[in-house]
Length: 330
Image (cartoon, rainbow, N blue to C red; front, top):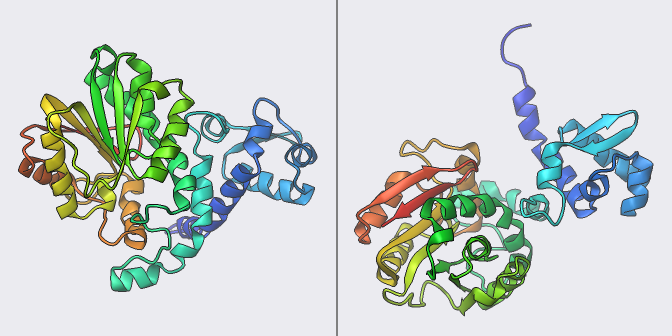
């Protein structure tokens, strides 16, 4: 039989199943239990203190998703699962699966957001003391880890000497954790809400560089960034939650805060000027629709325009191996 098949539509329709299976497996430590030691459903149930029936359902689903291998009744982690779904590794993405699982109720109301253009999520980005940050902030750190490494290499952070930077809305502090790790003379400053900075200090401490990680508590919309104070600045995964006007205002503050010859690094999900790009980045606009009052997924042209108006004559846009893009403004 030739012609279209329903396979892709069925895969998308049952996407909630996949998220539920992965989020549940992460919560119950299935991948941790299997790391380096393939096991049966009964063994997994015993290790993770869950029912045998539940273990078998998860193992079947995970194998069906291609995240586990199966041989003679014993399940094992695939290389992808070992790299990204075992707790304690810098690349761990299991926390993000749990965040999506917790957020299911929001997406049931997306038709309302589409109609009104207004957010429907209870966990919006403008609530400073939202308990949701304690789940989200550490969960998304792994997305930035390889990108921060890539930026450090491009900028020569390791050999830059006693430099400093300002990470605005830095969350977990992952950028400072990476950069401070390669440069023993540097100092990283992070501006974020008090509760989020507390999370960041805990995360950075795991890398043994907490003594050179300084936090500034405040709302970056109203806090002054200073004048000619920093060699570098970082604006990672913040632009998408802001309106165009707010992004322009922040870029002007960055221009003032960076020393002559310094560099602003922007990292975000960025689309080409015709609004094509990585599938994750293209879908991310829907996340901003349901969760923010004015955020969106912006185009390369938008960043060039804002940064140019803010006083950055040089804008370099660099693809990464992840769904996100790096922008270097000087």
